[in-house]
Image (cartoon, rainbow, N blue to C red; front, side, top):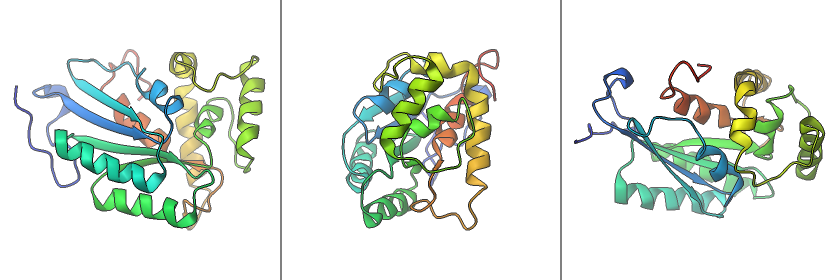
Length: 207
């Protein structure tokens, strides 16, 4: 069945509840396993949404270029680039966000670690901590050793997802003006989560 033509921002204009066409997401991730394992676990109906998750292990700027090439081949409805502030240069991080937006892609970034998104399921964190401390903090919050590349963490955190979204939104509002490269901690991962949740049956989704 043919898909409707995507608009200039890369989003299909059809209404979700008509289910006339399948939405296709491309999610390219800086990490090779942690982020891909999480997003591949989303409980979206396969007859409504197709999620193509790529763990490329590239720096932010190169990741956006790869997303562009992949989108040329398949013409996805939504393209998301997922990367961290990490130790990348300010120029690399800023250029990646700008270039992605110029191409009509969305960015789910974390400053400075993707694990911030996991922490926000348990508590509101508005103090920057070293990347290594996120692992220690999650071990404490889970009450067991945090497994960075877990394939079950989405299901483990699902019941707390609405808390994480509220905390992430609250965190972003703390910064005025909003400067992603300097705002530590902050994340926009919840925006991608909410975009996917729109396709999850209401009996399961919090949104």
